[in-house]
Image 1 (tube, rainbow, N blue to C red):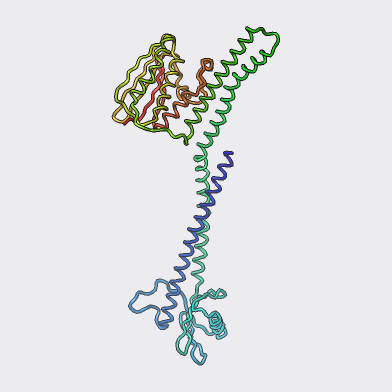
Image 2: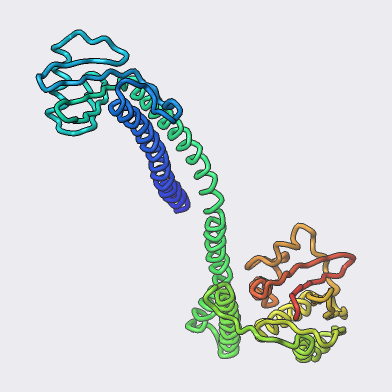
Length: 400
């Protein structure tokens, strides 16, 4: 699919470029041809008006000075010639005059002799001016060759540029396609385990060799796995919702300081039961423009993540401070296993877990991905640092 998309992009781009090149070079050739013809016609008109002079009185000599000759036919049919050529072939003269008279046009081109003519009727006589257009035709022929050469080279250059652009344009789509395939594969893997447990326990329930106590355990296992699957599906739907650009967040001024304090309150008893300590340091009167539901969800995801991966009797620190006049930083740190530097960026990817054993704790590797999407929609930044046994997650947001 990606190759076909690149091919379509290159094809459409080259069709447009080819049309543009043809139009531009065609206009250049047409304008040049019209200018050459116009200069030649002006010269012939001047010669026809003043056959005894090669220039116009009071004006500089014409820029175009082509080899020409004149034929003037009197009332008695006698022809007189003049110009650069000494014409003695009466049959040739009669042929030229007859050709012009048949066409009944004041200007024209006699291709057989490469002559451009101008016919000016006068009282009692006919005056004809003929110009040798061989040099003009040679110039136009060379111009056409140059246009074809420039057009061919331009086509090749734009083809090369189009190939490079196709790679650049399709790269985000290719990345999204790979992420989608990876997402489906990871989701299938995550759903496969609880489904296997449910099916196994359901089959055991139908077995006659199990007593009621054993069947009760099977029912409990089915219930636990069903809840786990429901939680995974809810997180997947939430991730899809935050991914969708059509999902409109309700942005409004939010007291971020109060929101952080309120979001941390429900976690205090939870952490206390786990033997964890929660400390908060929230600077007051920090306001941001955002969606309060999404921002609260981000805070809850970070707090839940810190509670899951904190060491026993560890301390979790929540902090919100203003940075400069237009930014604020939310940080949440916990004592736990140090995250390797090469995994600090991967932990925000979907279904990624540095430790696969963490899936048993109910983590599917989607929370941080959801938080990342929400922060990006708020034009913020989220990242993690790990050193000396302390893992810290940062969220930087513009404040008002």
